[in-house]
Image 1 (cartoon, rainbow, N blue to C red):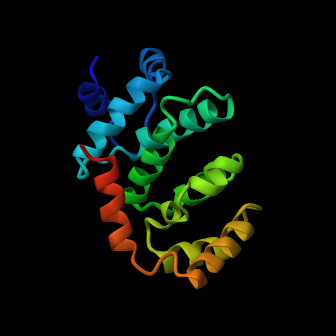
Image 2 (image 1 turned 90 degrees about the horizontal axis):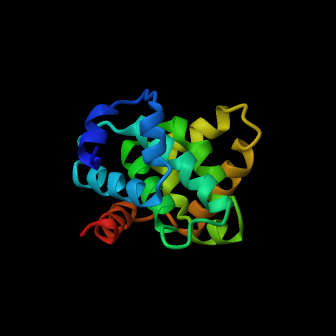
Length: 163
């Protein structure tokens, strides 16, 4: 199965992967191809698939097996940013805080796909223990100007991952 067929089969926000699909997604190069196809087709609802990929990318990163494909984590985060679903804020915050490298290199903007104010409101009302530190960090970043031109950031990121 190629990447485009894979996406067509597993489109939507709720995804249950077959064992074959899971095996395919276990390969970082296949995930990269899926991310490329999703990037090319922003109107496709691949949010469930992106969440599955984010989990695999985080596991790959934590196991130290992400060398050649380390950008997959960031690319997946950008594509989730495009989806703009508040349910992704905490998982993206966890990805940002996996280790020193992601803490420094994982854009805080990735967490704000639903909008900066909406993200802040969501975190203020969340009972998740990770919501408070995420909220405090976002507020500091807002004060520092990190969200002043999200449109320019999004264009830069889209071009960065584009071909």
